[in-house]
Amino acid sequence: MKPNLECPTAGDAIDQSALYLARGDEVSPARPYLTGDVLSGLMLPGPDGETRERVVIILQHPCSMRSDGVHLTWRILAAEVCEHTPFKPSQWSGNYHFMPLPGLFGSESNSVSHAADFDNLHLLSPADVENAERVANLSQYGVNLLMQRYAHYSTRIVVPTFQLQQVTEPFFEEADLNQDWCEEIAGFPDDYVNPQEYRQAIDSASVEYMDWIREKIDSKRRRQDLLKDAQSRSTIRQEMRRALRARRSNATSK
Image 1 (cartoon, rainbow, N blue to C red):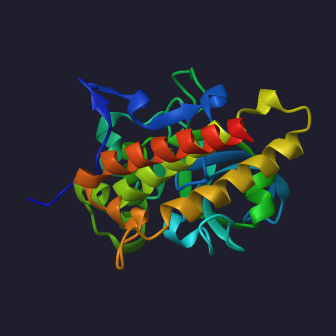
Image 2: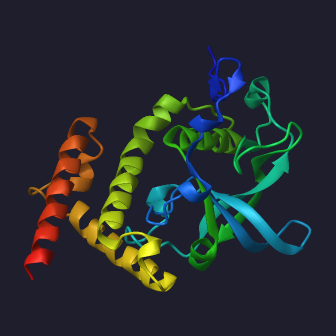
């Protein structure tokens, strides 16, 4: 049977919570930018030539977003997010050029929701991304749905989300570890008077994390490679806890 574009449901209704990892104040600035991040406050041109403030969602795959694992590459692909009438569950199998984003900004009316429009794409600079306000992170399932719909929009092929999960899971796990490492080392925005100092602390912690996760554990494998094996992920997480404890101990003894 031909697979259909999937829809996050709870009973007969859309399950908004399944789409998002974090929204609004829940979004951690220590989390690395990832596919499915929603950014607001960007001044971008549109198809009519008008430059105005827009909301976008990152489409680019994590592997191609960074040249060195830390710093964003010179262009990041994103789709514009627009207001749209709410999509019913039955409408998710059509409307190919949209990724519905119900509840993106919290409660919504019965007549207004939001969706990413693949017909309106933007190429963002690193400065665009880093200076924007990150208003949401999609969950892993949400990222899989986004990739499913964008791949179908581009190729008319439907890839089941369970297959996408197999290739996105290691990157999501790495992002989770990166966030935990940075929050442990750099702390949180309220710990800093100057926001720029916090951003620099996060960048420094991210570099340190990438050095650690890419360190070879034998002649052939790096810790990063082991994240591809679900059986090894808890071991890597335990190793990271030990590394952070050792780092705290060394800092205390100095």
